[in-house]
Image 1 (tube, rainbow, N blue to C red):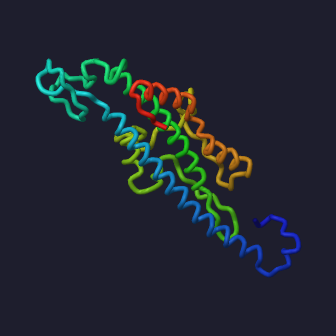
Image 2 (image 1 turned 90 degrees about the vertical axis):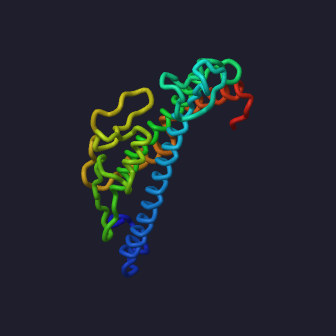
Image 3 (image 1 turned 90 degrees about the horizontal axis):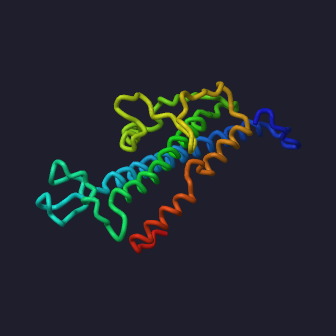
Length: 225
């Protein structure tokens, strides 16, 4: 804003400072909205992980019982929770459905990790006194109170790690380290790349999701979408 050409408005007293102040207030509002959206994503993915882990089918009653039940806790110590390998609906076992669920969850976990990187970068930008300042956040910083606890549920953070697992792109290994941007405002080109990456959901394979939904719908005779 300080270097922007204002044309005929440049002669209006205090116009540049007023514009900077207004942009700063709007920026703070959108920072809060961004963080709130990220918080919602973390909680949603945590629920996905919990649901995927709850898909266990344990034998009910005696070990040779033909009865089974969905549960988090087995009645028998050596029960793997696969329902004895029998088909749940028509052809596929509970293990097959679990593998599909974990495949879906893995996509959303990797996308959440990538979006966290973008959130860290975007929240590091701070507008102050009409000048773009860079208040650098580190990957190891907790973005909101209880974030690391929420990420631990999803497996993106563990008690042994002091920071979340590093992000990766679909089909690639996670980053060995993150390159920190220099402490100055990001260029418009970099911001455009960040926003495009956010909107593109690059770690979500929509074709594979459609395939999985089709498989489950045909097997269960239940429409999912």
